[in-house]
Image (cartoon, rainbow, N blue to C red; front, top):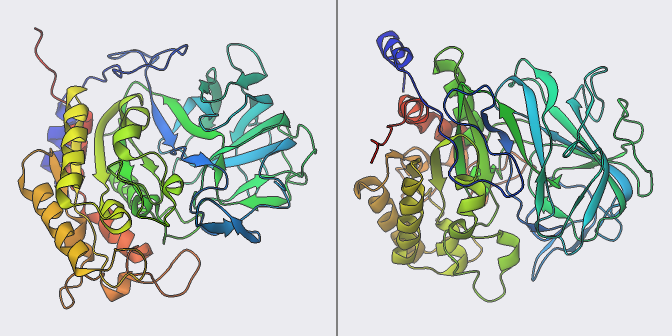
Length: 467
């Protein structure tokens, strides 16, 4: 949808308020409210999903091994021979959604069983591969200290650090972490679709290196990093909340062509000058809305915490969140055998909790999965449930908007199926699985979101009258 010149003028004429998030993380500074120069929004996020290697990785190098109950996946045996880090450095590459100069980085040990000590941590601009642009690598501190120990089950947020990002679409941040000693079980996000880099075991602290000599191993997953916050009072966060389709399973590696990425580029094109809307992704492959879990033989731990359980962490506690777009439910149906009513019940709970925090929510219709060979995804019964859920999303009036992804991805000549042009694998090549839209399908989905509505909800939220 195009925004006319008059629409842009109307948007720019409004004033807006960036409210303090309602949930603050303990022992950390909360984002400051309304117009403060110290306001924070999310510039990049990923959902911590479990313990490496439990989950569904994509494009990962390495021999196949056990990765959860009934699941196998490529393992990083050269870099992590026993599935943990040993006195080595991880250089995680992330792409912020908006430009800025002041950042905070969240380190997570949420799924660990022992404390992890990071001897040093740095953040700088990626040059290419594991190299860092000379002069940009900055040490991270935590309450003024260069080393930090994160207890099991906890996260920690760094002090602000200055790194100048002038073009968020072309510049990446390199977050380098030295794991001092043994890490124990590693908290991770399996499918990053972004290449990061690891040193050899016992290579020591190489966080300050700008060259890539010490980083011979690559990974397409993120370890220990879950959030990068950006200090901007003129910005707001939009959270894309979902499963593997939002995570971009059949998008290209390093192509940044998931539907939230497409939405970010469209938002950048149409948003008022000097005001940033940061679209961040909180998606996990296999994730479900409900707690129903997988049918017998499935890998429930691989799916990460269900949406109703991770909503606080991944949406409500994030700074500057004004809008959430949810695309979830097909795994409840196809992986867990849920009823449409159970999924809709999960939606109702999520909508209620999101609205209670003054955040708007857009419902995305479920894309088709007929023909899928695994689980219950491809059955006529699942398709009928999907249509019932999509009717609720479109007509219930409970959502603040609708992104009709089903309408743009379904084959009108073969109802219930993806369009053939969207049903191949852009990640690693080959045919599709009839469940995950490819790059072309994800581009169509990103184009189906009403950008004018997202901007209106994100930049000019209604302020509740004083009691």
